[in-house]
Amino acid sequence: MTRLLFALLGVILLAVTALALVWLAGQLLVGLGVFVVGAAGVLGRLLWYLAFTGVLAGIVFFVASAWRPASRIAPVQAQASAKAKAAKAKPVKATGFKLRVAQSDKSAPAQAQAAEVQQDTTA
Image 1 (cartoon, helix red, strand yellow):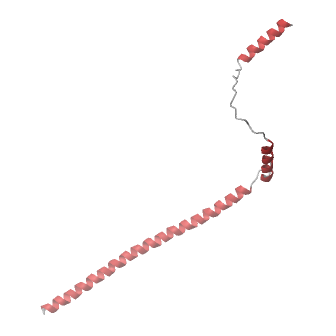
Image 2 (cartoon, rainbow, N blue to C red):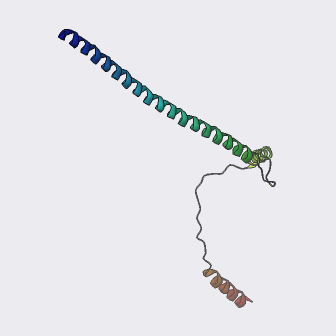
Image 3 (cartoon, rainbow, N blue to C red):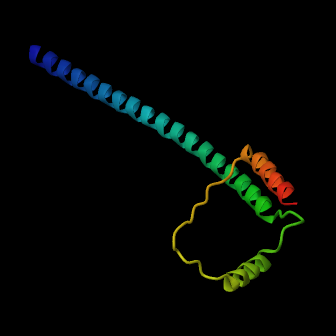
C-alpha cells in the first residue's frame, strides 16, 4: 500500500512539475510575443515617419531645384560663355610677385603740397 501511495505521489509530483514547465514556457513565449509586437509597432511607426519625411524631402528638393531667379542666365548659356572666356584667356606666367609699397593717405597731402610748391617756384 505504501508503494502504491509513493507511486501515486510521484506521478502527481511529475505532473505538477511538467505543468509548471509548460506554464513557464508559456510565460516566456508571451514575453517574446509582447517584445515582437512592440518592436513591430515601433518599426512600423519608423517606416511611416521615414516615408513621410522622404516624400516631404522630395517635394522640397523639387521645388528648390525648379525655382530660378528672374535675372539669372540659363545654365547652358552660362556654360557656353564660360568656355568662350576660357578660350580667350591668355595663360598666366608664374614669375613671382613684384611688391610695391602702398602709400598711406597721410603722406598724400604732404606730397601734393610739395608738388604745388615746386610748380609755384618753376612758374
